[in-house]
Length: 319
Image (cartoon, rainbow, N blue to C red):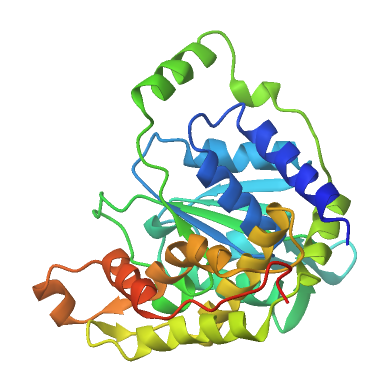
């Protein structure tokens, strides 16, 4: 496998997105990794830090067909999935696609819509398909959902159910920019929109090729055992009420392979797992009352678990 070529392509895409997202290189690479690992991304942060801009920048750099839906209380499940309508002239029922039929679906402020509408996303995120009136329609490949939500403003919001949180491969928080970064943002937006300067540096075939390359990255049995040990530790921790599901274990395995590819390797090492573990695990945990009493966050607990679980020794060539 020509890992150097894939690494070059990944860096090329990331560099293009950096034109509009300043000072958040680690966020850009994590979103890109989730994309090439066939995962969905939840970006949880306050308004105005560039969540939507990030999604739109990727759509343009990757030449992906994208749709954006602003989730509000009046959005219906059929707005997302589509609906069947009777065509009087033809005398038949026809299916009208919803906004989810694209390559990159931006679900903006996902927690501001009803639970009923949120549930419309469950099938499409897991199965990459949509069922309407008993007929199943496949979504295009590649397919990724980037959802955003504001964790601060709770008025009029509906918390995402655990089953839906579990379908997001990673959860990220962009945070405020640095002072120098914010100055650069002000200058870049003085006379133009930075997104306009983003070039199409990849296409659907590029993403599909990268996804195939990720599938071919080697994982030693010791790495599998390490990932399972981390997951098991969350299930046996008295500060955690609900630990990591097998879906979470699979997500950590998959994106660790993506990290290896981005680093120019065709094999996974423990550092790949550790690098992304918080982003994969934290939003999947349900903490117990003991954690709240001890003032422990999900990040604190995962930190402790990573320090406690023995790290396997892997040879230089990963085998």
